[in-house]
Image (cartoon, rainbow over all chains, first blue to last red; front, side):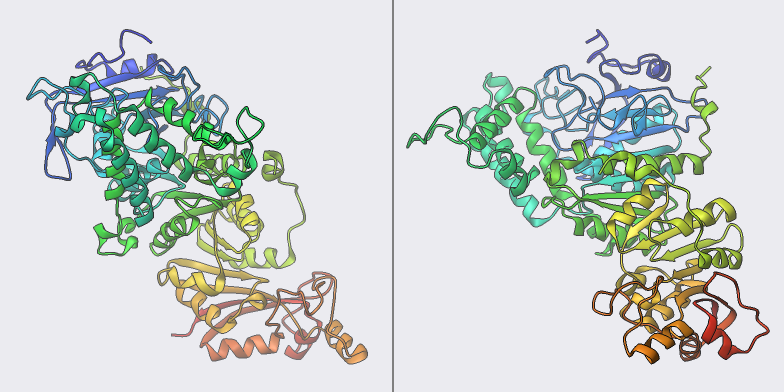
Length: 404
Length: 213
């Protein structure tokens, strides 16, 4: 951690900072006099975006890749997490010599608006009351998250992103970018995602939200002032959600019916089974790094995402005449964002004669696969990115030019 | 599957029909290759003709290989997925050694002519003398080095002869711009010889078609 953490940046030397501080813990920028107009009709001002960046922005600012994080992810895509001390959540994919090579590309990852790792969210101070927002925070959408990112990309002086990549909710942001800011996205890699959140997924999110709100420590969202913490509710929400990230096969091969540090069942409600113990651990580890209200807001944002509806039910309308190159990735055992939902995206793109690749990766890891070691995903992304770089004319020499 | 296996690209001789298809395609064209396999033809055309290429391939494994090579390929099926493409979105739609494996070759051919200005179709000629000989002499469905599967496990469900294909072109109102057949050793047959000889000696044929106005 450096003393830059959480210190608002009003200066204009942002790009200088961005290039000198790559890889170090979060930079953030506060837009003091800018209104973020939200899809709900509300506005957010001021607002802060916390982000991490890696690598060097080249002279013509053409080598930037925006990584978008998933529901419970954050900006620490390839650097150690300040709370958990764990390595970045996508270090398998992002880093020097990795498929998203930080020796070649300037990689940016922002904490989404509504999040809890430095960007403005329900745990931030509401300037009107001087207290934390809590449920006074306006409901945000995937579109709002992306609009906030646009402010940052503008500030960095980047006209067109070389690529936007993300999985799950990150993939929704990718689709939103490609749909709304098509000309600013040279290539897009939506992974394990969908153009609209399914009824089943909304249902799971509702279970999670109800678990949080049923915790007496939630205090109608004002737990920060009351010095309580709805840990149990949030942990249960995480446990339920975690099951949806895995697959029957993965759970079976990892745990089966194995018992947790005991010879036989206890005829009680202890965590007899390893899978129970694992879920409890996942739940309680999660609450140390995540804000319960952020969980409510971000799940809601995913629920509201529907690119079909925005184009009269015809998804092809979302990508009309797109010049962006796409690589759509899905996983065979992902039942949360099943392959058929990726295929709908592909069909909408082909209806526009778009340049699209589509790989469905054979994996038994479920939705989580996009975060795991999946060599076929890596080689597809690497092949796609290097072909796109060639197309964009990103030569080796460009990549090493510094901003003068 | 290891990373290595996917990205390794062992050089191999180009398929005869690919070389002929290449000769039919103009530089910098937009090309859709239906049934593109691991992308060998698209790669050849990208390298030598600087085309803007897309592919559809039914085998996911092949698709993943092709994408790892930087080609724009999606998993899909000629019979069901061509309807998604807008009219005239490509200069060429290529169907190389695939039409005989489609469920509805006529519809597929019509789709090709709708999607692109030119359709290029290559196919194994079932009128080739070796095939005729096997049926006549042994009374069995032919099995050759190029068509090695037994009748019960072949994906090729709609074989045709050069003559049959020419007649389908007429049915779908396609104009035959060019037709080339290659013999068993991969040599192009001269255009001077009579048509029935092509139908007898051609092992494969490549047709360049356009839609009759």
